[in-house]
Image: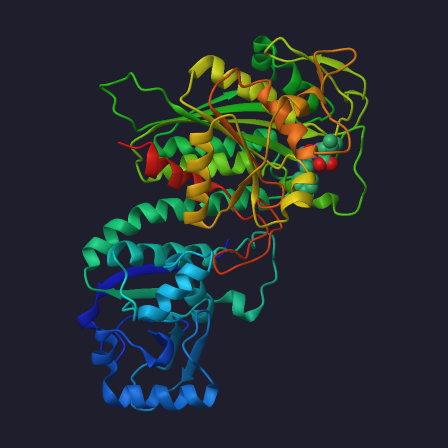
Length: 525
Ligand code: BES
Ligand code: MN
Ligand code: ZN
């Protein structure tokens, strides 16, 4: 994979417009870029005004008029070889309204008022791969916490910088370049560096999840997925991998039924990060559960050919859980967290399960398989049951690319949220707004639950044409045994979702930042 961007912090007063920092050039002699920020109506921060002086301001104003650059958000003024400036390129990034105008806009928009993450992503897209840049991080609208704003900027840069090019043997010129090198000038470099450490951990977690989703299913089959999860041991995560024999022993008949049509053996991985107060030992862990269908052909109820290649991403839920565990461990979160993922491949074949089969789940409940393409819920049924039974967690949150129907309901803007616990649902919704990984709650209830009663078994695995995401969630609820629980249907958000300032990858890594925020806000310490 291409080398990730290199970032360091330097003091604001070490930067001068006359000369870029010496000795910062790589072999490719990337041009030195100076990045400045400008709000609407030619608003500059104090330090920026001092840095560029009257001449610099006049230069920018003249160029801005010619380019019709007004300082709007997500706009930039790109000046090559500007006269009187030591850098080879001057990049002025628009940051939008300031003062009362800004407050008015905050009230009107549903986006976050100070989105330094998106700003970092946008800046990175303008700087470009292989560049050497100095970002003068002085905003016209001063952030409340400058160091954490700078750390968020870095996180945005790293998320935008992510590229999955492992299998491209012929690179285009612009892809050949060395990694970008970026110096971020801030008031307090030491403080920014400290904060950036934990933001870094989260960005790594997101990018890890993205890679797992992007990997093709001939590479990332269940055993290989388990191996990748095992790499978290390096960060101090305990990882236990259960094979088919061990799952048979536990009675995981639902998960195993899905995997039985494949030559690739199923796996069940349990991860634990013990960052909570060890002396206390009383507090219950929190638990995250992921659907890990490495490839979903539909099984005997086979899917149509068009778009089936996307089903390599049917493990996005499990990928998110691994990415989250990475983030929590790498930033040494003060929490006791379980990650549990069921990893299978859903294939047709002589040994595959059939429509009409009746299988027995670990809970003892029997399931009539109406459609072998409704396989995710079968996998999760046993994982949910195992986790509540073994760990008695404070709560369980599962993530799954569970239904196409969730995209019919919500498009790709929100993940579907289902929960038996209003507090948990509200907290997830809040964390979703703060991270811009948005969720929308959909209902559960006895009338929906009835739709999955079966003529021959305790339940069936599909609920008819209507409310497909809801009946899938009702199915899961039958395996949570009263534990506070939330289910995120990420079929629309985990893969192939619209690109934005911080994500250009097919696999988005959705859920890592959301759940990391949930943990840091409510469950740490
Ligand atoms: N993995 C799919 C859901 C999916 C579809 C995810 C498209 C991402 C994009 C899931 O296993 C599935 O096939 N669900 C069926 C359920 C149906 C058979 C009740 C569906 O949504 O059609
Ligand atoms: Mn399916
Ligand atoms: Zn599936």
